[in-house]
Image 1 (tube, one colour):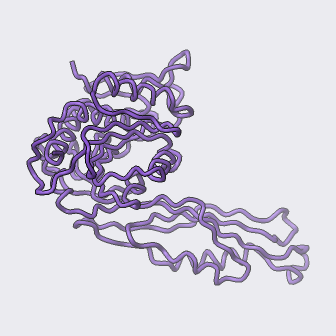
Image 2 (cartoon, helix red, strand yellow):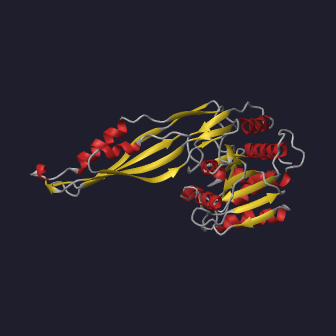
Image 3 (cartoon, helix red, strand yellow):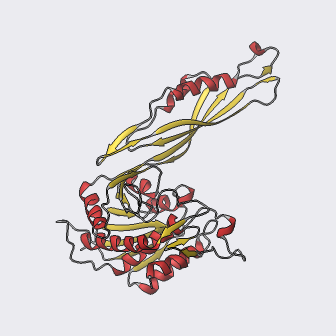
Length: 369
């Protein structure tokens, strides 16, 4: 029997798209029953466990919330998610994103034989496990934990990194993009459309701002040999009240994919008359700032699989962005493959889950005194 498969099935079966408490209860109770670690639950619902004592720490980080399931991912009574195993894969909401890797991290946290690290001259003192709430709502749990003082020196965030360099290979992501969503507000003066010169057309002003966006250069950077290209695009426009009225308001939504250290100069849109720019969401990118730590995790990945893992970059944000912004050295390494998360056919390979459990355990044993 595969323990990581069984634990994944247990966690995935618990609904956690609206209320994460039951899933948090399951994580917390397992840690209390299966480990001798110090276990805590904060007022936001985040679950923490610690092995060892001292100022320097390595954390395995995940989250136990999920996006809303598709209809056929929910059981007939509505009180459980459907979990099925077919052809060596577990299918169900949260299998890939990310209760599978969370289960692997829990088992590695329990079983790692720490105390004689192989790699560093300056090892870390504590092994930490953290499972956050609200990752799918923009990192609510991670941000709250950081505000409360959660500050590991190093973190392996268990979001997906499998299948980036080659199918089936679990890679190590040393960077990922962020997302800044913003709105351009254009204001004018209404008038009857038969006399357009009597007003100021807010849509025209918004179009002037859109021209500024179109001329902006997308940000680019390189992290540990991985090139990241950002993007900036207008995605929505809304304005006007009637076919015969010169519009006095217009709003334009902008989606920007950010890269570490670089942003598009969107503030330039305010050079257009009557235009204001506001940021609605800013999920930070991540860049690993320690090549030795990345090499340690990559070595662990190479040691648990036949393929040749590589350093890679992810296209979307994770809680690693919040941790990195707060000073934690991060990589992202997990079982999910591109295209699995948030889908009606979400699944994860059981063999890769077992691989990730071994990988996480190797990282801990390489670093924690």
